[in-house]
View 1 (cartoon, each protein chain N blue to C red):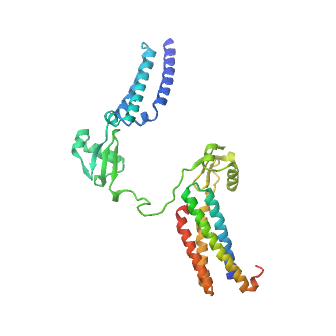
View 2: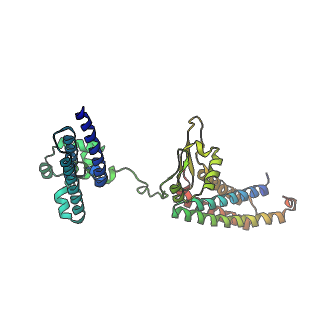
View 3: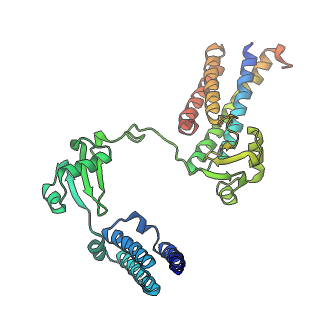
Length: 68
Length: 286
């Protein structure tokens, strides 16, 4: 496994976490829980953006990953 | 033979009267919190028994007496609600038996309770050592209520300064294979959600004996066939594991990359993940 594919994998896991947090925020009955899930979801979005940028950078630096 | 018929008729009449009376008097009578309620409950029962069996007695008199007792009990309850003094007089006040860890001998004598009786009452509360008790009160109902010293009290999350999630009451949305609509609305779910959840578990609605939704929207079901094992909801523990894994991944990336800006970015995000994990910990456990 190359670092690039690892980063890609991590990125998709984070996307999954974000989506699950979003459903939990909607399904929870308790207000505090809703807030906690929602805030965490937003932070996950930030992490996701950073990782996306990084994977784009890596693609530029190492042209052999262009197609992945 | 007419005697038997009369007893049947009287029994039926008094069962009806008693059911109506108990409905009117409500739950308070059952808990028998005060001596007065206890006695009036017994008396109502005795009057009914007496009139049913004593065939020379008038049924109307019996009903009148029961009604009178019920009305007066209700009246007493009502006045008790309004006046504290009346309440203390009729229902009695609790007596302090142990205060600041010391037994109040005078109060014990006044209530005519022996030490053995007090100890037996405390033992019923799983208290064997009187030295553990900070404060104890003999309630009007004859029970004892005891406050343990702080160090002997059961440990709570508050003592450990743990953050815990507040959980709402689980709603029972399926009973005997039928959807309970009130609970459904209370939990904020609809039938479409239910059918997808049931499909995920691989059961049909008719096979579900009991279905409950907890405050996170997880559905747990009990089905008629006890041979089949239904998986319990795993979503939240799984999510916790995923967040942990991502956090560890980010830390590995931070160590392995050579670019300083990327290193910093990974580190910052790993910290963010850690923060998220800390905030969600109470909500993601089991």
